[in-house]
Image (cartoon, rainbow, N blue to C red; front, top):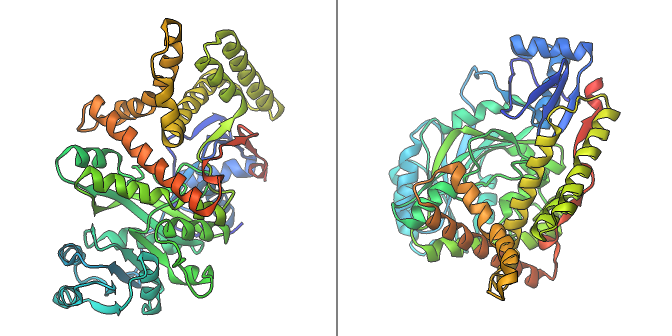
Length: 476
């Protein structure tokens, strides 16, 4: 394992907690990490200061890879060697706003991806001192970024979509992470720039490009499984090392090309990180029609991504005992639900005892797993089986009120839970209606992609057999 370099510090993830001396729980997916005496000493050294040795660097790498902690890079001694690449097609006014926010700190390359009004794009680029490359035929954002890479000579390239607004220091805040030689790319938080209407307020609260305020290692199956390339700083040598047929971004993908690249980088052994302490703004659709249309287009990427990365895409991950518990509750079988919940608690305690891990808090943890399974099933049903849920809500006699209540909990539970946690600028009714429409639009896009590519992988749930990873490597 390549250690995290000297000078890096680490910050524990907010969910990480110490179960006992040298025994840590947290990460994504959840795991228990046990430290030996040497590991505990290395942990103490990291708590007091930065990485100073191979031992502390190896522990820091293990903790940050697992998601129990996040790397805090040292301040650079010199400015980064970066070129900002801005792909654009028409919308010259948005390009002007984008370039105006960048300043003159780094060279800027604008790639005109077949704009109808090429003169307007050229005039904006010239006004801001940006170099311009023109593609005569529109190839999509991936093809435009590939063209940018052909004209970039710096080791780092900062991709920024023309409908983004970033302060001049955004590159510096991300570039310092490249003191880690394994880092291939790092993304900022993308905040919605949306009008003050129903669609805009919903987008500001639940925009699909905004991945939240928690830093993360980006990898399939984790809390942050991808990052968009609307704003991304990347190491050019890492990108070219995963190129296929000479293309870093797959030009066949008009949507989802960024997810595909992130997953290929992960498969190649590189690290990709999400650093929300740096943020950029992103222009969002102003109407429901445009917003839901974009969500449906995003959904169409699931099928081609599943064909390329069949193990990385799961619409719903189910753990056996929590899934049985939720199923029994929805079927109004309280005795079966209690037995299943007892089975989940018992099986987890057995696993923990087998590895000498304290079992305090197991009941609460399994109750949380049941809650998350219920929310996941609800969102899955809304996205991929909304007509069935609607049919089950149709009144059919007094004795079926329980069935309708169960279905209503699946439909309304996820958006109301999200509303309660976020407290957006919308009331619960409007937020819930918007979230349901959002999920249905995305699901429609997924189904359309499945039909076009003749696959059901993007809509097939997976059963997770191991509820918790006990990391044996932590004993070294």
